[in-house]
Length: 131
Length: 127
Image 1: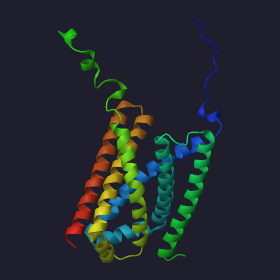
Image 2 (image 1 turned 180 degrees about the vertical axis):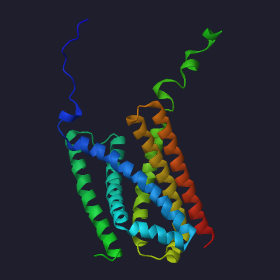
Image 3 (image 1 turned 90 degrees about the vertical axis):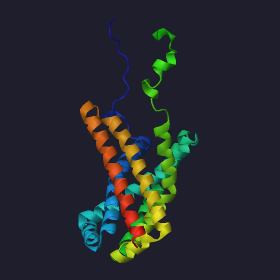
Image 4 (image 1 turned 120 degrees about the horizontal axis):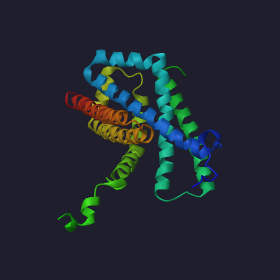
């Protein structure tokens, strides 16, 4: 049987970028980063339980420049994943599937994520004594 | 003899259905718990920045705080493990590497959960 010249679905490289697909892959990527943050959380708790010296060691790493970049990064990924997670839970209830609704909820999540991440960074900088 | 067996007995447990919706549901249940626990944790974490060891420990030794931290740690390790499992399933197609990574994910997050529980227990019970 001869192979027919049928249309192929577009490959990722030539697929027009859309907010829907971008937010979907961002949800995965922030989830993976958050999962790494869980290991840092375990380290923090173990250090806190182990004693002053272990805790000082943790604080030294967390307070270093790469440590702070990581912590502020975790704040952003956690906020995004949580807010977009709400969007997913609403979808799981069978709501909000109309395309205009999907776009509206998407932009809402992005706006709220920026606001909450900003607030969290400001709070972190304030208690950290930098702002 | 085998023809006396109902086809279900042969088919059950095979195919794509295997575990049904258990994984999917567990991810949503842990997500629902984290909806409440993450805001608590974030506020707690920010409030503990710059707090010395003794005071941070004393804060977590409070029964309510220790309970919520336990709930958060157990929910988040569960949620992270389930999520990473799907990521490995979706993107890693080399059989030995997939098995190795799945084991690594399971062990790492089981250990993280156990270590966190031991740590919180030690803080709560030796305050």
